[in-house]
Image (cartoon, rainbow, N blue to C red):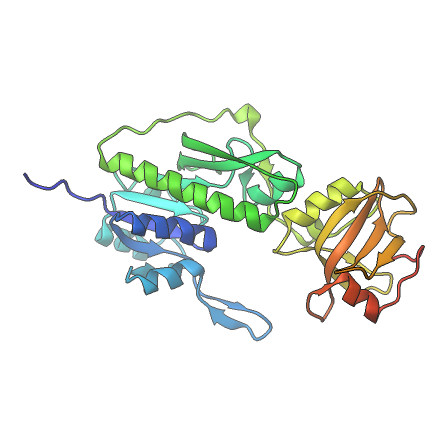
Length: 317
């Protein structure tokens, strides 16, 4: 019996969540012919040119890498014809696919989106879901079209958001969930199955806008519960922050809601016990800052911060 031809796959992705999905495809034995990822970018104060995580993984595993500056020129179109994929898989790639690319593979372009669509379309679905106090999130495996996360859905897989989850823990849960669901979709294609297609209800759609610097600024006139969600949604990138009365920026690495009342932004209590805490009055309740990163310094516990800077009850941060 002649063996069934393998599905030729091109994988498009850039950050760590994409690496998790790519690794699952490789470990499950699928025919990933090439990877398309973003160009190397300078990072850090020394602006060292750094490859994206997907490129690092692909090179370590002998997968050819393409790093186009645009998907809209003849050079990329020629590359696509040469590789001739049956299926394009996209995970957090960071570039919009033009119509000629969307239309090329016979099995279409399939995307992993880190939300339960149609909620949280856009660039920051994980962060916005945590900020909004959602009790669950998940991944959607979907066919791509010309819109922004508007394509027909194949699978949706949900997972709870707990009261201690941060962006990091939600990212890791969704990376694993997305990798499993994506592998399942490819396996079904290879088995000759017809994947389900469910149109999204646009009336239920919400938009998860990119995180800007202002989104990370803590406003102590807001309730402590909201600030706790904001801090967890931005940990570990880019971290929420407040500006001290002297103008210095302090990033909050971890915190928790607490009981207390007073003028928002003032210190209600400061403790050196264990890692310590700085209790700050909020619009409703209080927030215990447990670890933080002052401007120009490394991360530290609240106790270490207090040893270097005396804070008095009633003092404004």
